[in-house]
Image (cartoon, rainbow, N blue to C red; front, side, top):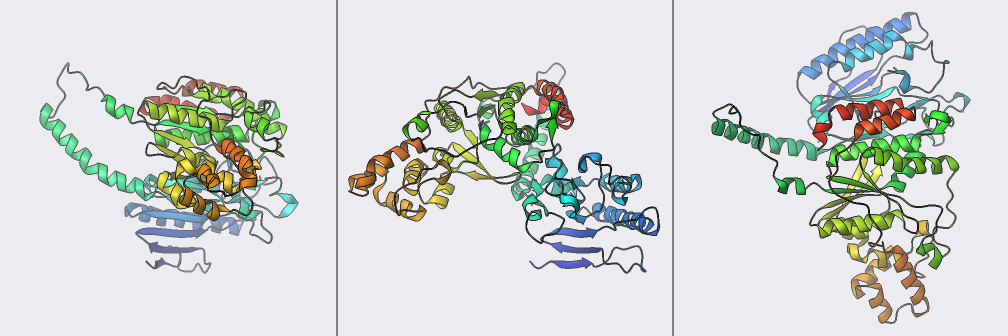
Length: 510
């Protein structure tokens, strides 16, 4: 559907000739695009114009909000709301973007009920959207957060993911702003609508059976065990998300002792968000042991060769299992095994007990674990996860999940330094497996006779070892207060506060 233009200027001042506001309706949503005045130099007429324009925006936003229609206010607001939204500096102190009047105006707008999408999903991460061209600000991550997507309640309930495309700012001849984005989860809206009549009907039945009031001395109904059993086991590839966090977040995020904390904060945010979304019965986080080679390395010395991690990352990888334990969750880390092996072992254990599992990993090798009861949560970009089941594996690779190790052996895996079969790419590997079923079937048919033993080796390397030792995986109760105390010892205030807030409402987590 083509967007319908609803406003080409901000109401409230017929004499205002500056083009700073445009509004359109598309697919049932009103999108208002804002370019708020900069206001410099201040004090002065430009700053007065900024505040007056802000007041007009606030009045118009209130009218949009009251309509009850889904609304998104997006754009450059030219305000740094808090000290957390700017790198450590005093050079901006006199700028109009940081003045108390500017921040108060932004706060007044937010108090109408708008949700700052990026901050809602990334409460402990700077998430800058602007870096000045001067003095290598981007390279030093001297950024500001001045671009926002503000959502009305209806859209906020549908918020799936949000972030800032920092990579765009690094391109040649680019803007000094990076795009801010959100993804709305239509499934949340559909589930809410479906649940509404059921909830209403259940409430009506309860009222009829109890005469409209609870009987004195009556005991609350116990939760049905069958419902509790459906809560999944959440299995997380710790190294995968720690690495992603380390490379995605600024190196200026530090804990006590001037030690790096970007990987810790990013991983913690991911863990909390995933727990909130999936409501698992238990969580296990799997880790590599970097200093000890595995059987894969012994059999094929080139395996994963060339990988090097700096000391800052290794230090944070050593600290993260302590954080996981403080949250009340399980760690799996044993010399000689990789994180992938623990993922496979946990899935096998959960399937044996008749449960369901969610495996969160950025490694596509985990697609071999997909089944009717196991779903892979694969990151696409900041905050957004694809749910991969057998159908999605077949759609992406053209093979079944159980054929993935054979597929990797034939196609190769550059990240693990597995060369694969000469002259065989993804399509060729999938075609061979559809025809012969397995790597052994292909070799039995006389294909690749000179490479047969090496292909078998690659297949064994690509196969996750479900015999890896596991800790107990009984149902867990998160210990957010303990995790908050640990974050406090590290000097991570935002994370400390977030965990303390979760501890206050921990009854809703289990």
